[in-house]
Length: 291
Length: 48
Image 1 (cartoon, one colour):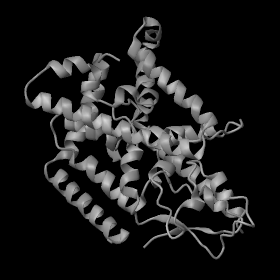
Image 2 (cartoon, chains in turn brown, green; image 1 turned 90 degrees about the vertical axis):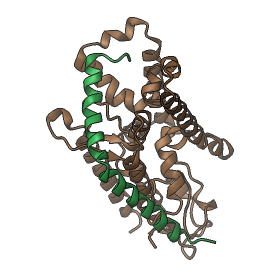
Image 3 (cartoon, rainbow over the protein chains, first blue to last red; image 1 turned 135 degrees about the vertical axis):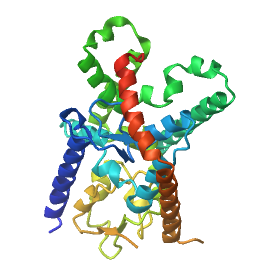
């Protein structure tokens, strides 16, 4: 029983991710619906049917519009589903999962370092917000100095370095416009963007979902509000006997969450994407919970 | 101590209130326009 369910769940998750990936990038074939989604997805992509709430939040703020809808999307989705959309619908997460299927020896940092690295995303989020506020204040004051000094970062403080934007917007636009040769033009920002993308894509081959675990600012926002979400997972103490298992749940968790050290009533880790890989527990001790 | 469900309900309520305000102010049309305008800007040659 317990051995069949995880593979069914994995197949269901893969199908959901693939469907989401196709639908959110179907603008090029004429399917359009401008959604606001709670994960990274560049609205500047020629393929995009949807805009990431984080990118839109920053862009609207910089255009001096209070970003009610992007904020609302984060709050509503996080309160109900937690970070489930990261695990089940995010196209960049799907790309990472696909690369993670490459059969090489997976590596994970020590528990202490994992905790430290996990906090990087909150620093990226904080830095991006500070940069946005700086641009907004200078625009309100009518000063052009900050905007000129920040260049493309004044238009959108996170997107110029986001690997999701590079993959889903920059590269498709370069192909469409026939400007692939710009790679050799010595543009430092372009090299930096491509370098970050390649670095992230190589890293996730060895470290599953490294971008989501350590760097994603949209994941950081969802993580903050998902601690009290309606949907979650718990460990049934009557079935969870460490003597009988090899901590299969922790071994299978792509987000490297120390499930056994989380409260059994409810796993509240900010990185849990409800991927349900932990349901591979041979004792079937992990189950979904909702209030 | 506040129960997690209460926090979730409060978060959800704030979210729906923000959605209502955003839709009332016509923000979805701003977002729609933003997607189109941004694409047009890039086509016109915003520096990478």
